[in-house]
Length: 124
Length: 124
Image 1 (spheres, rainbow over the protein chains, first blue to last red):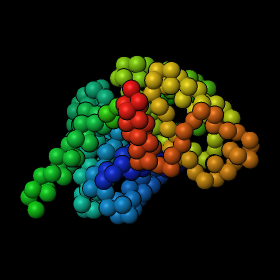
Image 2 (tube, rainbow over the protein chains, first blue to last red):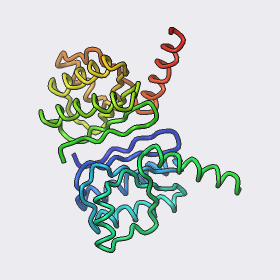
Image 3 (tube, one colour):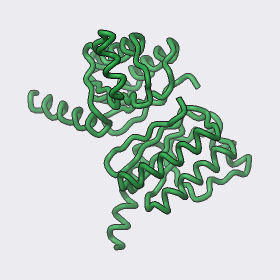
């Protein structure tokens, strides 16, 4: 199984990462997500990484890339469910998830996206 | 990675199955889901199987079991995202997903659960 499913929930796309990311899986996910944002006009992406026991520089870069791609396609990205141990390791390794917003869990991530949408509606 | 993450979204728990189910993974999922329903008081479970290319009798039985366990804990289960080819094979094999409700995608599954909740509220 080499493709990670992307679930559509209203204006938000939800991705649950459950497998250790290989190069090809990461590239497929980027492609699929970009295509899905363009097709659905989604304005938010939530990526759940609660199943990941390790987030190395490769996965960190992938999350940054996805976030950057989504932003260009005018969608916000929130990474949710990071384990405390993973956060500790990230900081110890000096890896900052540049440009990536995080939230404790899916519910809070969704709420964060809702707030962003309201703010951009008020600003426009 | 042997545990499938269960995401909480309000009163609904969401599970995305991405890996071929082995005995142990299926048992862990049943246990985790039962514990999570009891802990959160969730009244609905959505299981997305859009990543599965094959649903054999083992997976079919697992879905029936989960649905049965959830029902006893007073939660409804909806299986969503089944591929057309999987549906065809299920029927050809004579496998009926007994007691399992299905919907085309997550959004419709969520809507189905919302309707069930309203009906049970009206009935009570």
